[in-house]
Length: 249
Image (tube, rainbow, N blue to C red; front, side):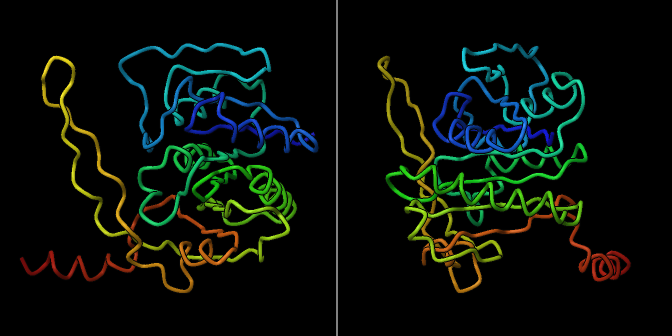
């Protein structure tokens, strides 16, 4: 039976990972391994200065005292007797569009699966109320079945963003490119009870490039966005011009 590792960055008790695991369990053997707390924004960070501890919850999910990347790495390298066939990260409670992907622990969890040689997807639910996790799970299952039937190139993952709508209100699926946001707003300064200054990150910037063809545009118009992300960050088209520049400095 096909084995799928499910992880996330919202924490192993979050509603999204439960919805995704339950939906996939209908057709596949699922192991669910995720952080013991919300690790949104953790990106590809690894825990290097502390040991990782696990706790098996009453529903069989495995809680890890580390990051999303830790969770996937530990599951594949230690917890599985045999490697899973795929890694699926999500369902994230909120968008992973445009620049968000650089910071996303959900995308990073999928990336770690790809780094370890497995096909991987990241799934996020986009909206203000975030109630239709069943819709995101439905489209995730559909795309995953397609990947298992017809694999894509090994140097990429799929970043899936699903509008927070009932299934029958989704207009379709579009393959997109990453859009872009304006710069994040400034830091929010406050004080703790002892009167010491503390700072919070400001909210993300508004959409800067949400033109047709971007992930922002697709989701804003009721479509599921599927963006292929390459694991190799090399800008291959810049190698020759950069060499020429280097030769002349």
